[in-house]
Length: 164
Image (tube, rainbow, N blue to C red):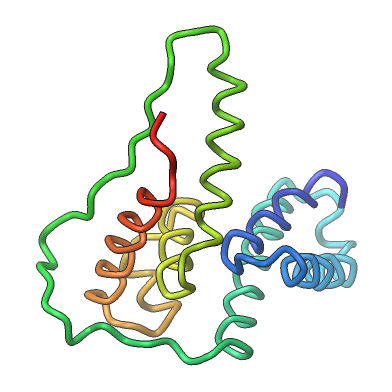
């Protein structure tokens, strides 16, 4: 549990944008892991299993307990246009590692300010390495909506991040 608690918690926290709810999800994940302890004890894929369970439980929580998603599928958009990439300037000094932690904290805080319909697909794409198609399937929304929400989420995230 100690080896994976940060991964499980951060997965849920990024998707939910709420630490208290993420703690609840993390507890549920580790209860499930305890139930399967004999299988997971010596498994080299235990970390991946825990992260997947955390993602699935968080998405289930969002679909069950949060307000319904508002769909923007009707809005005009260019599906072939890639959303803008977020870039972070990094100094050429020895403080790069310290600065990286500071950027991580700023990104985490900015993610919490995004609306759920932008935050969730953005986190699934950038932090969980899911493809657009997989995100659309998991969230039961159109591919166009996924692309639009990720594009808008990136722009909103960039607006919340201070320029260095």
